Amino acid sequence: MISTFCAATLCFAKAAQHKKTPSTSHVKIVKTAKKKNHQRASSLHKQQRHAVAKHVKKVASHTLVSSYVAKNQHKPSLELVTSIGHNLVDFVQKTVSTVSYSAYKLGGSYFDIARGVYIVDCSRYVDRLLKLVNPKAYSSLVSYTGADTPTSQHYYDFFIGLEEDPSHFWRVVDNVEKLQPGDILVFRYKNHRGGVTGGHVMIVMSKPLRDKNTFLVRIADSAPTRHSQDTRQSHDSGIGIGSLLLKANPITGQPSAYAWGIDSYWNYHVDVAMARPVDV
Image 1 (tube, rainbow, N blue to C red):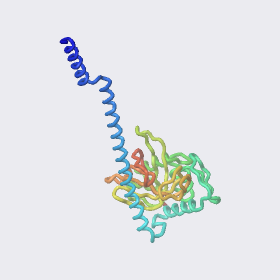
Image 2: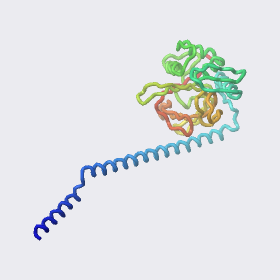
Image 3: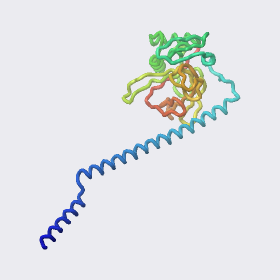
Image 4: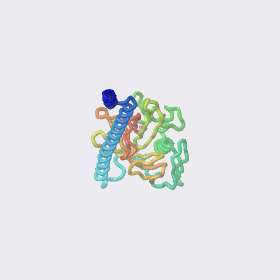
């Protein structure tokens, strides 16, 4: 009987010891579960922060649009600008308003004003407009870059060079707030390592509307997708006029980020240059 009692006591002690000391595999499972729960919570928190930031930007941007409409509904569509800027904006309006067919095509060069057919990329569109409206400014660009048909890279390099070597028929624009209708805006996209992955060239159609360090900019371009308040239909590419956002450095006024549309995320992986074609 004593031996039976001892055996029972020993079994109870082992059971208690087993209960107090979970197995290694059990501990790993618990830790893994906690880690996954933490990751899910962290991911959800990030999504919520992005959603809030997007909502705040959307509200601010729609405020900009409403303000722009209120301020400009009784004004003529073309503001008082340099003659070149006026002519360039006017010509853009003509091409966009008479489109019968348009599509974005990288390297495309089909530009037929009479038929209203435009199958071009962003730089070819701006090239043709500049060449027709201000051939002297276009020739200056071509001469500097050595390219018969300048791309976004050529525009960017030329505009950056204007800061140290001012050119006839062009003036550098060093602050987003100074942009005027007819100015040229160029992006050079970068990856996370800083390498250039492409670019985009646009024509500014009206003076930007400011809300703190955010600017609503009305632009014309040839693009694969539309911007906000765009003349292109939902799934159309090609030439058109739309609105994007620029975020400026509060000290220098230089662009530090862009959003393709009002509901788009900010993209900080970009270099931006701005310049104005002029008469002399």
